[in-house]
Image (cartoon, rainbow, N blue to C red; front, side):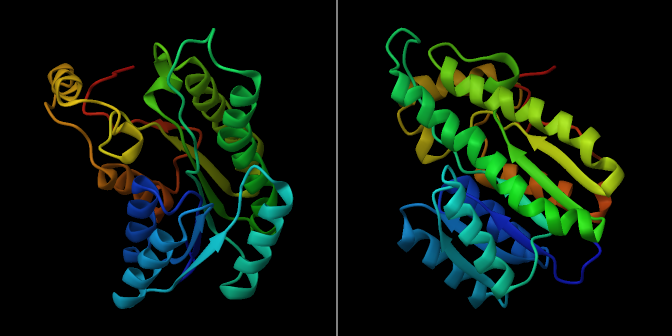
Length: 248
């Protein structure tokens, strides 16, 4: 981004990947807005860590599935740092189980957070981005959005939707100077994957050509690069830090 201190909003910023992204963007010189829904202590601790390192960060509570929450979040962001230059749609829920067992309520909640949340944030961010003829939107998907995951049909569907959204928006917003890309992580060591036992993790490592499980920092590095001027000619792309687990 061309701004000397761009403003970055990371949704789901209190989780493992969200924290790594927020911290890395701060290290890249961004003023960071850390969105969280419930885990205020983690968000506050992250902001304190960023501030201790000389950066600027504030935590903002919002349920991104609720458009009124998102509107209030962007108003707070505007008052604190100015318009959002970099939007990272990272907030998300997972679901593991047979498609025959998921309830309509669970299905709708997954889409409400994973897809509608990105939609609400994009709509809120675009007026200033289009006006300024610059902006960067990065949607966090998953390898299961690319190839599908058994017993993760609903989750895969939401992550596939983010990939399609990113590609379509890149075409729509390119003439306005706004870049839209997608990061689709593979198996990353986070709380979301804590349900996996040591045997399952060992199996996943064996399936991965690089022979290891990814770390949140691996995702954060991809996001930071996409948000940088080095990627100024990159839009509509899906980058998948997955150690070769999925090659497409």
